[in-house]
Image 1 (cartoon, protein in one colour):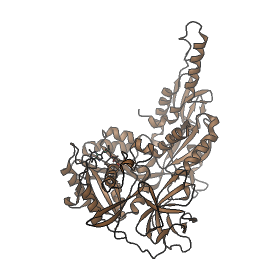
Image 2: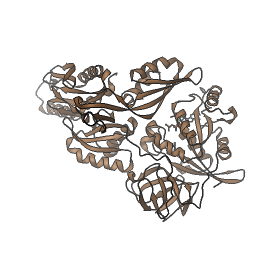
Image 3: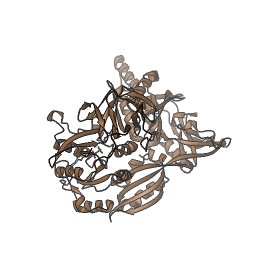
Image 4: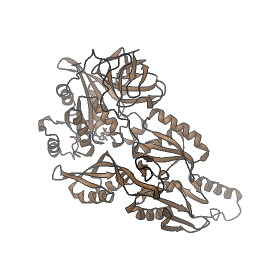
Length: 598
Ligand SMILES: Nc1nc2c(ncn2[C@@H]2O[C@H](COP(=O)(O)OP(=O)(O)OP(=O)(O)O)[C@@H](O)[C@H]2O)c(=O)[nH]1
């Protein structure tokens, strides 16, 4: 055990985590030329395109230092706020962390939030100043920032370039010298922490774990504590670029497990694996069932494809346990699903995967967070509102609560005013303002989660000219004044366009929605009144004037085949439209609320 080091790399997005991991693998000879790819740890296509490590993995390296052979387990952590629970579990599986800071960008919001997670888990922090090769690097200043943040000596910070290879050897020495060896007792009953799982269509779910005490042996009957289910360990092994089956994985080490589980939901990140016959008395602390934060309806564009969509969603869920869905129906859109996601990025990923991997064309409705409503009749009973139409009749409502977050924003001092105005507009209350340096400020706000679902990231980018980084953590539910704004097209309410909005901004948003819908809904043969209403009260009205787009007008002369072609083309254009009553509504209209400020 003395010769094992378990560590992770924590960094803000794009500060070079994947590149550094790649370089470490290279340097320790853990990759053959054949296996080399640009970014080794980002394996999913989608991940590579987005440049975001979505799923964490682990990889084992061997390294000889001062004549002794060491095993270094690098546990990769996802880099996006939507996946913060997974990050926390990966961190909990380590004894040390490389804190990578870009020498041109300095400390950003996720540097800090990840650092806090690492400190909570008592990890040894090795600061790495990356990208020192960049002409725009500012190593002296960024070193000072890191010293201020960590209270460490400047000498402890390793200047490095994951690109050119500067500092890589020093980083490896520091991992061995500074990161404590794992402690743990081989003689105790098995206790292993699940920090990740990956779905493999051929082998079922692969569980990644870190053994805290005892050992896990091939063939052993094991138990997952949180789900209380028993399985046989069909295969255990260590992870290099490929899996290496082993007889057993002992306390202190990291490995994978295959049990034949076919459904990702049966393996929960944060769960404890133990021996089925003599289970441990202590489950590893920190287990949480991750809950979706953002909900939206997903409907097939073609109503006949409902069953196909269900099959696709079920398949997606097999390898993404954080996706939840339940059938729902909408008067406007027909049959579809109300889906729960970890956040907006997760939602985009699912939408993209449905389209790419399953060839589905779907309409996604306005996302909303999950509210709690209480009626006067039953003020103690929580009614969970995941869909605006679930909100009980306003006259009977005692109160509505909405989820709040602690938002951390780091920006340049020049933009503090802009960022504050934006956050206040978004119902944020400032709780702290700290100058990290003379130029860089950390602001924290308590804010409703619902406000960041709408256009927040884009607006933040605009008001700060890109110099702001953002992170958040949920802090519980708070009472709020919420109303449901309904949209009526041609006097018919369109349920899929309803949104829950804070009472103070309901009228403004209602107006903007009507204006936006007027832009988006094509003119038809009759006038289309577009109205926003709260209950029976109309708060705004616009009208799309009648007009028929005469596509055949261009066809002077009587070439019938040409005419037919054009009509056919027009029909195709309609495919992404939805007939609501007698009005044709394009797909973008269902997401219009998100783009009110464009
Ligand atoms: N010049 C220079 N560029 C670097 C260095 N390290 C990483 N980069 C570049 O910085 C960009 C981001 O690097 P990644 O390794 O993908 O960053 P990451 O932190 O893994 O990003 P996420 O996976 O999105 O969290 C890439 O274009 C890298 O080529 C470095 O030391 N010097």
